[in-house]
Length: 274
Image (cartoon, rainbow, N blue to C red; front, side, top):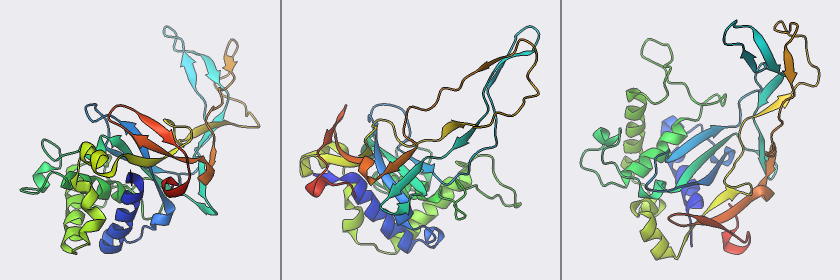
């Protein structure tokens, strides 16, 4: 079977070694994993997730009376934190998830990036997406990259025209460097072709599949006074997250993906999560 997330990781290694704009990225800091996504459904092909965001400032949820506007109920104070993902002794700073089989069946036709790739083969849409997600990694590793405008300010949108144009330029830089076709050849094939040729498509996932590590809220051990508190204000206890907040390599598993579903495989031998 073809381990799709492993192939993507090897491709990313090659890309950052050939594209100067992305050369600051150490792929050992990036975990590639698979999510479920049907080809005929709407949704992202891939997503970059930052684990390097600091804890938020303390806050609370509150509810107002529709008539008077007075706060009648609030939650306990909490902060929002990033989960910890450690592979061996190394902390993961970013994760990039790919939706299978949706990503495998991606094409350029009628996409926002089509205009940057006149006359190229449809599979180039997938290479663009890989570079796109790598470009979201912030050089300062403080979250998702902010896009600087010509006047020195930052765009409020991370997916503007300039972003797509810059990504296309990096894709051209990569292909102009003449990489070994074996590194990216798997992108040429759609999901059905891959499943037939390799007798199945597998990828790294988390044991909590379909869930994965995400930001969570943590109750403050010491609850400070609140200016919103008046007579009649109810304080609701926080509902603590049910998902883990710490993950290691033991939480990684291999799943086989199909057109409509997936199944977990035994984590051993050649299917061991990379």
